[in-house]
Image 1 (cartoon, rainbow, N blue to C red):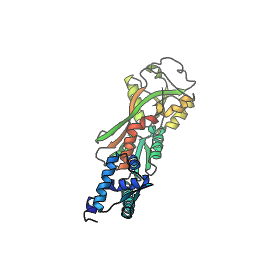
Image 2: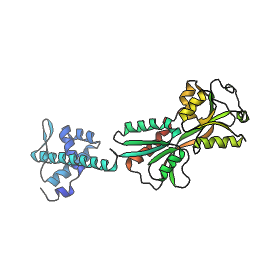
Image 3: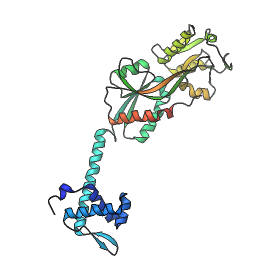
Image 4: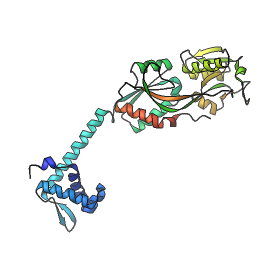
Length: 308
């Protein structure tokens, strides 16, 4: 066997031999490899020239391997196995078949982010995704400190450079119990809310800031009955008739569908914001986190509640 066999040998030549052995003909091999018959013939001719021996022979049953051909076929099997092992090792190093993604989400996003993560995990079952839920300042601090690969929120911290992928629109409305006096009105003026008791999120919450901005715009000083750090507690308080609340419509999707809460048709509402998947621009994302960012950017909007 000439000394340049190993130097000039190619994977395509070896795979052509394997395909002929499996198919029993040049035509069948060409179909398996999605190549033309002349292309397969050329690969085999070059391989035989390198080997210095005939590797295939015609028989009444089709193309068959010679002893030299079977020797080379055994080499192909070892090479293909080594290539598969190498590819698997590289994928593990790159994190495609494993690794982790550290995600954070503001509490208002917890109503849809887990569904997006579940869909991602079905596609990449070996990637471990952790999710941290907190208020806006908690998640911003975690993003600043490089603790998170990706954060799902409205607006990023102003003091760091980020990359953002828009996920979809985020409406904010005022909700009330179904028997509230303003329910059923086709139009509620903002001034009609002046005497109402508001159940609100805690200071530092993005929802609380949006509420204050909206009411200040209409020169309304809210009568705050209770401040809570949980959307679930706010919903329960409103259903109990303890007051009304300015809240993300995504957090009350099921209660609105079931008629346990209603949206008051207040002029100037909903206040519309945007959901984003955010990463620090200077944080290097390994392939698992990059895959999650791409997934959220392309498909994240599918998991937002379908509100009207």
